Picture 1: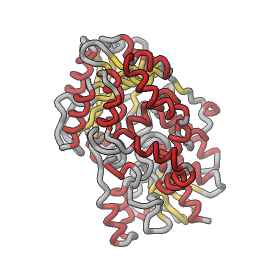
Picture 2 (picture 1 turned 135 degrees about the vertical axis):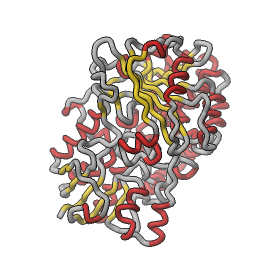
Picture 3 (picture 1 turned 90 degrees about the vertical axis):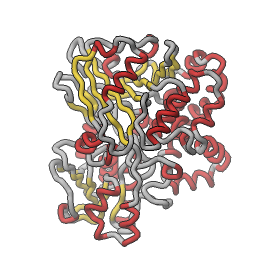
Picture 4 (picture 1 turned 30 degrees about the vertical axis):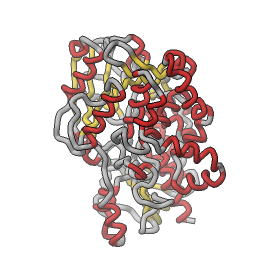
Length: 474
């Protein structure tokens, strides 16, 4: 009998297992696929010999997360690559806003909005460890911090709860407003809604505090190292072991599901109370994503050369244009000019493609479960800011929401965030509780992106679930 069985081997599942193993408890990770990693892995998706990130591609939270900081990356051969600029956001007339890792340079290039940008972000950058710890915690830890540091937490809460469109009024020029809008759009929520400023602030501050790095060789390096750390700590991993029912689990004292509520209900719904089962069924998923992987014969010919200095590029134009695109998706429509997130890894990592070739990773938000192929629209958005781009393409692959879910069952309807981020769901997920990782089955815990603190490669949902499981075991 194992002390803990973890179902799912993405970053959260592996983080949960490592946390358990470090306490000298026996732990087994079960993974349906024949490889670990979930959506954090890499593969040749275009048949060109290039390395494409299957899911996540840029990882600021992987270096900011309290759990991930405990992983000895260097000892296992992982090298983090930090481009000079975290993010670039081009505009139609050849201008571009750039979030350089250097805050002073960013402030200087934002001109008249530079002082306002500094006033907003410098305190968050200076106290980034504390900010990240709060936002990657649990509702219970947030309450405790509020009692211990009421002034700091209340001031931060007032900022985080605002709509991004309100926060952006601090700026007057298109560059700073667009830059903040692009960060906030990672929420997958219309920018006029509460708490979207929180996403913008966390990601804006991380650009200058830790950068937006990625691992040399592909995102799969992250979960490779985590799997090695787990086995070194005495944990076990079994791939190719699909769990469709509780009978597929070996005997254990507790189970951590690194899955979303719909999957947990399918596997173990009969063990839950009627209320607990309803909670699983009512979990609200967010918009989907349509992803485009490209191979080109040269770098993207950006109209503004500074854009080539960023690992991540946000494409969507002005604040108003980005907001309209996200509002369309929020209404269940496809944006005519969607907000596109793009990563250009091979500008900084020559291990990812054969000589002379480059990779482009990009996706846009679409309505949940959309069957529409947005590949052409995404390419048009890139071409908009990089004339001649389409002539450089030598191979491509489009992944619609159904394709993403087939690749990883956690991506229900193409939802890459594990559930909707609207309103208080940014804090209380998957249920309204100070300890949302617990369920009404005392030995079952939720440790996926569906649980606090939500999506991103940070491992903290798994860590929190494991902490709760260890308390149960004791």
